[in-house]
Image (cartoon, rainbow, N blue to C red):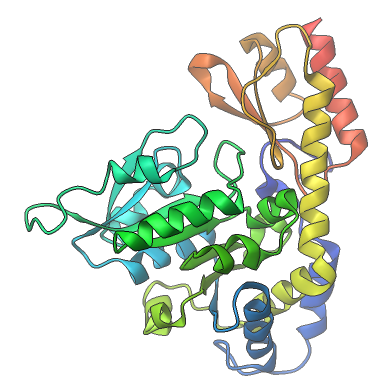
Length: 343
């Protein structure tokens, strides 16, 4: 393991010290397992305070599990999910929505990773036709996989359109903290208050240790989910250690401080390299990622010092991701290396 901070993924960052301290605090004596402990009961109330008064939340191990279980909870076997073609659900779940949830994905091409009511409308076809899969769920990523952020107004428009067509709206919120921080809104301001029905609330990318949550803004959708979670092998026996992490994340808005820092570092990195020879920023920098095109030989040399991902090899497009622990010195060193190689 290297002490150097990378720009590959916020998954590569360490666990936040406050979160580790929270785990240590609850690591004392015995407690009931499987969520029947005081810590897990308390986090239910804290998450309801953050999202919606009647929200029901379920802690799980992983983001893929959270997403797939949301699909399972919302869709019958003959129903489908409308999502962007770049969505994590479509690109990075190894086919789990289809193989495990049994739901067909109806993908939509977008320029900025964001769905609109007009784009969704194109996929609402064959309704009532027994030969056709039936659309049931609209799933959006917040932030999107290309770093863009849905405004509250955009989400409200999607929710209203979905509900008018008998559909539900799901948010894949692996980076929901970054989006809320970028918009300077609470979680409920981009979920319950705009009509979202269910959320995969990401903790791992925000500084937690393998802890995620499924949050139902409409508690009726949670009926039977405790069995679905167990059947999906996402029920943690020592749930208190997941609950303690979320409590730390929500206390004094640690999530907002971490996300704001990551977002600010991405903006600083974009400013530092914008205008350099052979560097073109390709996507709006709205959260904690920077997308750019650089020469292939620059990418190879740069990756030897600072690991990061190539997003589109054909276009020489790369992604630089900032994390809660990215510092100004990290950005300065990285930008200087890019400047030297592009000179």
